Structures are given as C-alpha cells and as structure tokens.
Image (tube, rainbow, N blue to C red):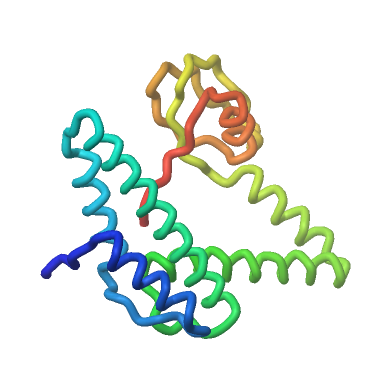
Length: 181
C-alpha cells in the first residue's frame, strides 16, 4: 500500500473542495492514516530554534485543517447520505446512530408507561462493567451491583460498575481504558 503524499497545500485543497460542495467528497480511504503518520513524523523530528517554531506552527495548522475537515464531513453525513465516508468517519457516526436508537427506546418507554423497562435500563447502565486503571491507591469499594472490589494499588487494572467508575474518574482516582473491538 503506497502512502499518500501529505502536505499543508494538499490538505487545504481537500478542505476547500469539501466546503465548496454540498455532498461528502471522495477522498483516499487512507487519508487520516497518512495525516497521522505525517504529523507523527513531524513531531518526532528534532529541530532547534526557529525551525522548531515553524514545525510547531505547521502541526497547529494541520490540526486546524483536519479538525475542520472532519467536522464538515460528519455534518454533511448526518444531514444526508453516508457516501464517500472513510472508515474512521463511519466509526464516529455509528455512535450517533446508537444514540438515536437509545433515545427512541427511552421515549417509547416513557410514553408507553413502561416503568419496569426504564428501571431495567437504568440498573443495567449503572452496573455495566467498565475497565479502568487506578491512578491512586484505593481501599475496597462496594459496587453499584453490591459486589466488593479492591483494594487497589496504583496502575492496577480492574473492571468495575459504570456508576463507580464515573465517580472515581471525576475524582481522578482512575482513568477509563478504551478496549478496541
């Protein structure tokens, strides 16, 4: 697989083409990977003085262009068809679709008097297992599922209920670990 040649001018041209058209434009499916590799290479190269400042400015410009490009492409996809989307964009939109389905499920439960169904969803969500890494030593806790967890040392990895994980994340005691499918 030959990697795309990435530079600020080509990224700007891609952004411009995207803004000038109402539909999502066809781009290389490897665009985001190529951009990531380009930025990684830029960041890893050691420069001093003015060259370092130029490199940092270039990374900031690329960040702004890519952020805007992604935002525009996703907005178009939400308002129209999902044609010409890259896999990374489809990944983001899958979450949007799931959110809409969940919203409809809750509305249906609310409007059809299905309080037991709503209680069930609430309990399942509170006790949904979340993988976390401990940033601080923590004594044993009782989970939202009434099970005991811990004690934990710094850098321990554990699966705990969502409600407990959220409380510990807020207090900077744990960090959520994102496991890829």
